Figure 1: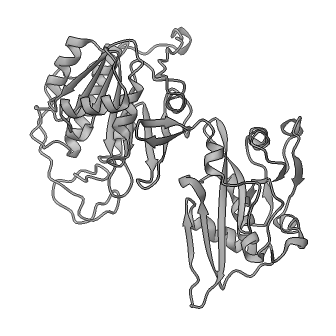
Figure 2: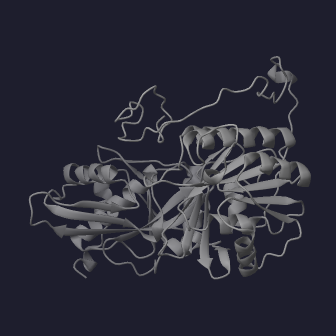
Length: 445
């Protein structure tokens, strides 16, 4: 079986036909499932949609606003949540802090640390909850016995790579064990009505270890992002059956644990009112809120045959398209220039609304000329040089105004989105109009 995508083969294959990765096949010994193992979660016969009773989701808040935001307002009883991230980034710390204020029993299962290690971390974080039970175990059967004994409202598994089902002869961490243990935990969760949070490590490619089917099993997939050399951490919702995906929570790692950053716009924007050439501000939309982000560009002369195109926090292929549009539609020569683009603060921009900001940063760096101070720029850039309308224009402008910006360069938008906006608006339809907004008086400054 392929450890990357779960493709099955009766013999070893050098290159996986499913994901085209080399040397990812491992031998998996599976035991035949026993009869009657499947568990029904509802009616055994189909029901009319009109006859199904609707229920209001009961969400449980952890008391950490940024974490609750990513979960969609709190976790839902009966749901399975997968939290992925690099080892040591703070996954265990976040989940340990999130259960501190809960008023019902919580079972924290650790397969990597001892009880004393968890106790030391809890003391460092100031956690003194009487509702928190710790179980240092890796056997799924013993974990289920602990669940039946305590009857918790929330179970934390740290981590799924260490848990094994004795019914299977595979080692912990293999594709079969991860998949079967997750399936069993999901069945137990749905049947008993408690919520389960599972920690999963990521591999060298930056994805959660194990087959992609693991992400399809669970209800919510959260990705813990951040640089180990930086104190800031990002939690992003990649999938959420009970809320909005792509929600973003921002935290700061300190000696006392993770602290919420309730004004992320101030984090990603540095000295926004005194910009330098090659730096612009854009309003990215993450989940249900707008976040101001600083986009930086550097353009230099290339003394070699192939100029460099380097990006951090932005798609390199998208950059190539923007450079082609600037050269063909904007009349700028960039084929002999090295172009470097960086999104400050460690955020990754993957929405079309960032196109115009990246293009403006490149133009500003190329001409050594800056746009008017305190300006927010966003819009989608087409191949013809046209600037297209983006979603949530009103929320982007409101957030920009709230954080002290005074001007905006945007595409056409519905009149209702521009009501009550006090920013000085420059509505442009083509990239040449934006280039002409560069004030000639500051050229070369």
